[in-house]
Image 1 (tube, rainbow, N blue to C red):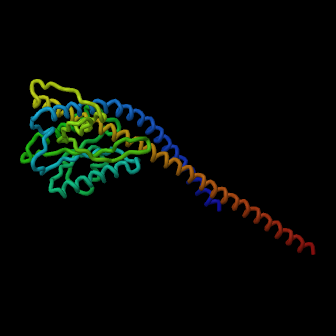
Image 2 (image 1 turned 90 degrees about the vertical axis):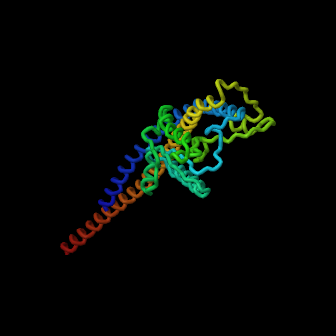
Image 3 (image 1 turned 30 degrees about the vertical axis):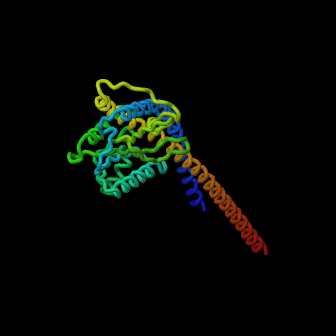
Amino acid sequence: MGAQLRVYKRRIRSVTATKKITKAMEMIAASRVVKAQRKVAASTPYAQELTRAVTAVGTGSNTKHPLTTQAETVTRSAVLLLTSDRGLAGAFNSNAIKAAEQLTERLEAEGKEVDTYIVGRRGLAHYNFRERKVVESWSGFTDEPTYADAKKVAAPLIEAIEKETAEGGVDELHIVFTEFVSMMTQTALDDRLLPLSLEEVAQTGSSAAAAAGAPKGEILPLYDFEPSAEDVLDALLPRYVESRIYNALLQSAASKHAATRRAMKSATDNAGELITTLSRLANAARQAEITQEISEIVGGSAALADATAGSDR
């Protein structure tokens, strides 16, 4: 019985140590997600305004450009998947990977070749384990991405979109990331970055305004293009891709920290419940041990009394 009590005490110490670790990780993730939220809020207006400017150039000119012109026959697509370098974030990475696989299946069903680019060790490990081809990957910055990281990721994608498909280029660019909705809700989604879908509708609240991030009913400003619309689009292309990727990286980082916080809170709560259960079992084992010792003492005393009474006779 004593051995069983020692087992319970050892397990309680082990679970208590684990609970301290998960609680610390929960607090760290909570502090990081606040910083990530601020960065998302700071980067979103720039990305929206840049999208509005690109939309204005695309709708206000007849220039054919990879940024705004859909290829007659789309044969190859690029998919950028954003995951994290670390786990312990619940279904964060698996949901993003699942969304990317569904997008890839849909594109392949349309007869398109898919080039996959991955950010984060978790996504890369998933594809490597299944021996799937990855054109290029990046890691080491998913928790706190910077604009320099976004530029590094965007560079080969911009190069691919500017090339002809016969030379290894792509006709369109998709990105799969996890959108930060709230502390409790993060949604994995896919979005087509290039080419932009532009529609010019005369009535107020046009789809072009919606695509540009403008509220319904708001009139877009007028722009003059100097030296030409094509030169403006050439200048805006890298800025647009970089800003959208940077915003997606920040959204993904905030979502990852929120998912980690939620997962660690659940682990801490489960550890607390397990400690309570083990403590009850340990108390029951201790009580059983005490009861057994009392029974042995009473039995020994009775046997001694019987032996003494027999000797007296």
